[in-house]
View 1 (cartoon, one colour):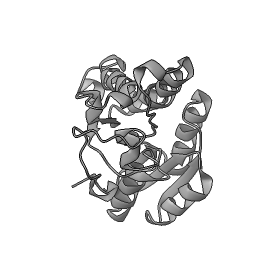
View 2: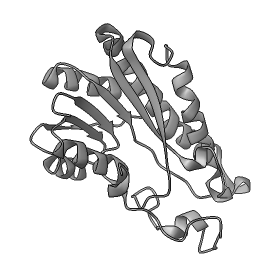
View 3: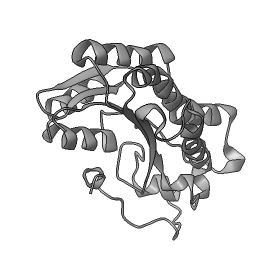
View 4: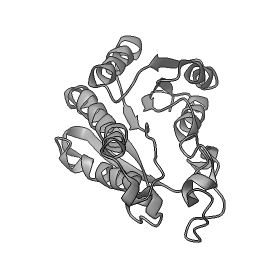
Length: 217
């Protein structure tokens, strides 16, 4: 990891923060991006001496391009780009609004698309690099009906690498997607209640949530 430059979006908490701390401890150079400046800088301080915090809203294409610019300005290259930023919503299908669906696609899909499109020219020029999209087991097994909009957006995210502008291994860079299980992060702000929905228990949802710090184990 000592010679790797890794960009992580959504790095101010949860899985993004856990990955940042772990790879930072392993010696990687990091560019951490998120909207919440105080939390982001706290994670950067815990992620080793070569961690750069970039406050950015990844639902805005120009700000994602700014992350690439800041990364190259500080470290000269990008070896790994991790699209981790995301959010969820808990609502039955009959209750979903246009804005609910638009927000899920904007945060969970378009932000990743912006990241891939922003960093691909650099990786193609270098003929190397890795792009990792953090998805969810709900993209494949939508067992929680109240998470239907979230599940749909994560399913869409899983299809993104196929259209990213190159096949796996083409030009020396590789796409990857990670389907994470249920972790206790800021996304489910009320813990199990958010997954079960207004206090209703769904036996298909695990009774416990994993600690984000176990994400790389």
